[in-house]
Amino acid sequence: MDPQRTVRMNPGDGETSYARNSTFQSAEQIRMKPLIEEAVTELLRNSIHLPNSMVISDLGCSSGPSALNLVSTAVDAIQSQCLQLQKPPLELSLLLNDLPSNDFNSAVKHLVAFQQKRTVDKGEHGSSPLVVAGFVPGSFHGRLFTTASVHLVLSSISLHWLSEAPRDLVKNGIPMYAADEQLWQKTRPIVLDAYARQFRKDFLLFLESRAQEVVPGGRMILSLNTTEFPYPCNEPTQQTWDLIARILVDMAARGVLDKQKLNTFYIPLYATNQKEVKEIIEEQGSFTISKLQVHDGMNGVNKALISPKMLAYTLRAGFESMIVEHFGTSREIMDEFIRTAEQLISPALPETEIKMNPRCFLAMSLARKS
Image (cartoon, rainbow, N blue to C red; front, side, top):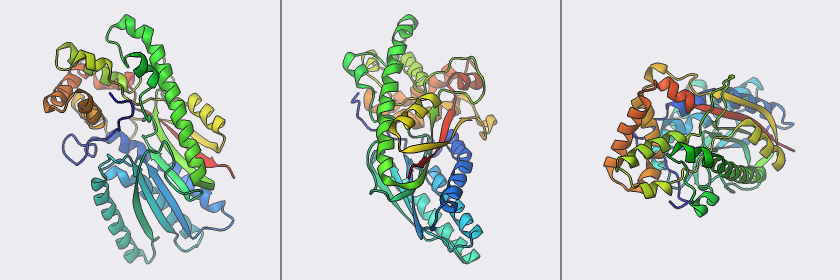
């Protein structure tokens, strides 16, 4: 697998699409709402002169209805603050970013609906901010916007995606995951160290890029996968890709996938922790940490909907593009992926599977130093 190949969520709105299988992502966006509202309040109330316009960016917006959730929360919060401060509504520019391979067509449809709702609100309430929007294709592991132009940066469950798989593993032929338990115990520390170093490199570059783009005093509200629980737990937790690897190993053992290809398959994704994040932010030095929170991914999720099938389709929506690119485009492979995932999850109830592969997220509120 090319260590620099792109990551793409399943497009469209069909049964296997990201739009239909992003329950955990949507719930995390709701949990981020108080952080966004608090950041907007501080951003506007601490300004000596209230700006006439603001630029808001969403990095890794993806597609489907969730693509507009974060910026919609920000727009509502800004409008509310302007009313409280008895100031005219600000002109707002929304810049939605994701990789060029993203399904922007789907995002455009929801953007049109978002704009239409704003027009209706203006007619009903007499005032509403002018909101213009655009898409900025590209990797957030680098510059995207002009210098000191962005007031508020938002990103939900995206920064755990790496710019590439760890080159040390690829170069030395060390698999991401080993089916043999004894071998896995020996190589796991090497694998995790390589992933941690790649995350550090990428997150430093992300912070350096945003430091140039965000105005002094501007804010960033970010959320990404973590291996930490929001409550004390003695159970060892796993990386997000561990479950994917177990599914693929099972398929390879039955001849559905090529075992040799499995040894060269890497998922460029790393679940970090608070300690790592704090150290990197402090090392880069351009932002202060206002808040760091660990969110339980099950909060706000209808547990009655959690089933082996639901979890299997969630995994497929997020990882299908990588799997078919590496192993082949046969629909049979992904159908077998679903069946295998359901079988592996079923023996231990979904709640147990989630405990070992936790849907936990690290959310942070950062302020650009003046």
